[in-house]
Image 1 (tube, rainbow, N blue to C red):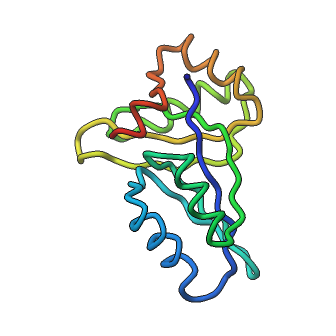
Image 2: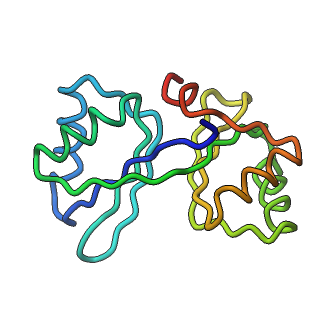
Image 3: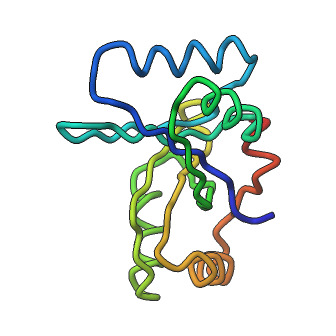
Length: 144
C-alpha cells in the first residue's frame, strides 16, 4: 500500500495522560516510529505511526482511550536545506493542500522522512510520483 496508516489518540489535557499512552504501548511491545502531538486548552491529539497498528489500537481502546485511524503519506527527502521546500513547491504547483505534516530524521545527513496528511490523498500521490518523489510504503516505515 502506498499510504501509511496513522493512529490518532485523543487525550485529556492533563498531566500523565501522555505517559499513560507510552506505558501501554511499551508494555504491549509496540514501537513508536513517528509521532506528533497537537493540543488545545481542553484536549490533545497524539498522532502515531507504530510498528503494529491493530495491536496499538486494541490496547489503547481497552484502556479507555478514543482512537482513530487516518491514511497519510510518507515521503523520503534529502536532509539538506531546501529538501522540504522542494516537496511543498511540487504540491503547491498542483494545488494540493497539506492539512498537516511532521517529520523525523533517521540519522543526520541521511534522508529525512516527511509524513503528510492531504485533503486529496490520491491526487497527492499521483503528483508526488510524477515528480519523482520517493514514497515510503507502510510496511517499510513501520519497520524502520
